[in-house]
Length: 561
Image (tube, rainbow, N blue to C red):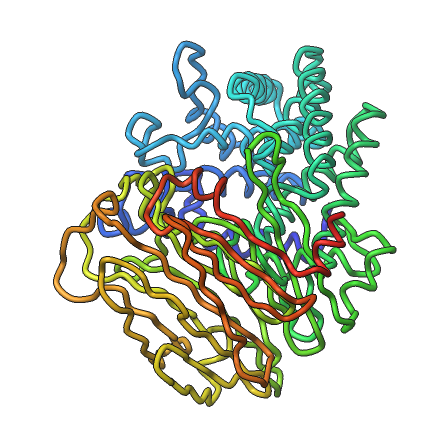
């Protein structure tokens, strides 16, 4: 397959290829799993990008590219742990400079990622490679399949659940291993049942991972010999494209929220490219079904909510609500940790003259997104009533890799509305009136007010600051010299806010009703009434997810009935 797009990708990667090491060299940007630090290792030999480069070279073809790909694959496969007695069996480290034992925590997803690319080489490019190398490739895919089966990821982990099904299903077909093939088919069947039970992907509306899920499902749909697997993949592709289409906002070109996981608030080039290819008249990659294409051009008003988890499994439900009109899109979850990859409340606004402004809610510890802050919210069209509680068993920057259990040292804690996107290029007037902050985003008004400030850390301090990247609307909880924080020692810690985007009238009145250790905040506006009920004191994360309550507006309730 020779295409201009593939040739351009190869040319770009070539600039980072080290012919002596036979690997691709990249800046060290990973923050999870690796123990390497950028100051000591500003550049690293990255194994998975090298595997992808080898795959691209073979796809393009030609004697020189085939020889280079073979050399890369020899090095990459030598880094896989093929000792079945070890916990890291079947996976790869991130970098050539760091063994699996030296990593902070090995990433078991590498069996899925490498396994998929090596499998595609075996399936589609085997005729280009010598027999000894093919034997090594088959062994590497075999060990990756074994590792995937041992780990046995559940269907809630959307992209890895699908990718593992791809590797084992097609790996079984290519290697002639019925055990693998049968496992992959069963895994896909289980994922389908789980997803249709919810009605959508549990890794909900993710700009970074939904394209991966679609690409993996497309592989099954187009290449598996299992009629059942092909049918299931087609149904899941339909769910995925519908989810993207109804969140896409034509006026801003934004993938509207909320987002379970994303790496950037604005779409990355790779995500824009995926959407452009999917909507192109002719494309070699996954294409959006014809019946959903109009969703990507529509400026009609949209207002809907849907569940995002299987409540019988979790013990609670998390709803995702989206509102869109011709000028803006605003989305929110009913609950979630304030992890840096999650967007519990996110908006995008057409600010005029081709400028797009984003509005992202954050809870920050020393300037970094803080996992131990737990969001609860309910949305009525262009308004969101939301709160923050503190978790006593969560992490700082990551909920698994950086556990602090509610005790840590810090200089600064604050709640922020980050006005970004093209905001730095715009004049954005900001008005502060006590606990209320208002900003004008072109013709669209943004307002937020702290209606309850109840913590042992003293009163919130509202402030606005223009930065090189945009505007920060902040509510400062604590700032100054580094100090100890202990959420277990607090007898109160809850903050409640009301926000509107695109409303010209004043923010609605919020009624607060205490009830022992609980507090209910409500907005009464007929069918648009909404409320949240949250505890006053910090609790464990799952208790907050399970026990915090929302009352939806009537229009959203009817959608769920």
